[in-house]
Image (cartoon, rainbow, N blue to C red):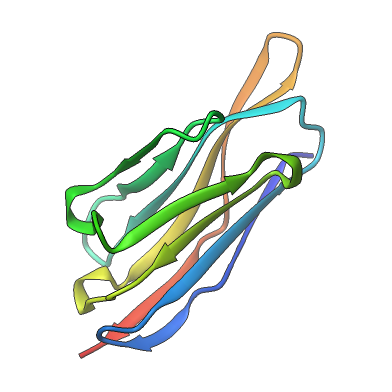
Length: 120
């Protein structure tokens, strides 16, 4: 069964850093795009950053220059290094992946989420 498990969330002060990690497990032929989304209370889930299998990245304007997404294809993992954190970064962060689980069989899967809280 395909599963994405996040780790690395927590409470940090303004200006601090956190590193989120997400590992995919199960029957995996290949993973295409991987990404991080976040959802703050009362707001819609939004894309934070994404990365293709080849390493091309895309960032929300609000995190450019502060966050860095990376992945290890051999380990089916994706990371999000978050620096210079701000209170407005407080949210539940979700890992997302476009996974090929069989021949002509692709699934977009979500992790359970990890809480990131930034105090002012």
